[in-house]
Image (tube, rainbow, N blue to C red; front, side):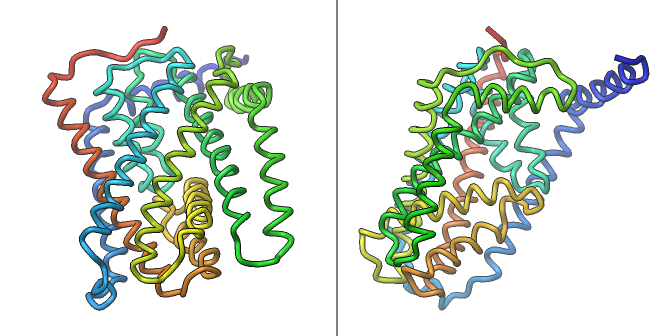
Length: 324
């Protein structure tokens, strides 16, 4: 490596260290997250009127909210399993605070907070491993989406061969490819090489990846059930359509995650749901249920982030992350 390249790399590392450790940067990042979330909530609420919500029952809102919270708690559980497979450890309260703060970090354009909050939780460990765990989480999410969407296409009330035959076949092939440990290792190490970092030699086994994928499938089922219950408030859809709603929602979330230009996937998720679920329910019902689902999701993320942050503060902030 040339001296100029080495000097440039050292400067970048100093900047990165400053962002991760400076308290003023942390405060600004938190302020930016809260501002983005507030704007996000306002834009969602401004599209709803009192007449739109007249048929909404308290029970359906509470049940859907609890299902969303359960989904996020389940996702955090399997995130800890994933980080353990990379030999990364962190105290429970520290890890939970970073995880739930990072959910709110998605609402910053570019999803910067999503990465920074989690990396900060493992300051005593390898940042490269944290990055690999994040990439693996995306892959496990994609694997779970493949299964949920394949299941949903079996119940689509249309005879379109592309949706009912070729989409499931393509997703099944993608699932089998991504599940192979060699593909996971080469994908992550290729990204590291592009950034000038050395390859990583510790990766989760296929068994661990399957376990995490199964956990994210459960997360998708809980989210899908929450949306399905809201949709039933506005439209008389049958329970046989639950797999379609779940598959459509999980795919919409996935598209929102990869849409770095859209804070929290704003507009991308709702647009995809409107496109797919218009086959099974009227347009107004889909729009209303998607908007309420977005608000409940935001509320659950804020409550979980607040609870984890308060618990960490009351604990005296004991313990630090480490690498095994």
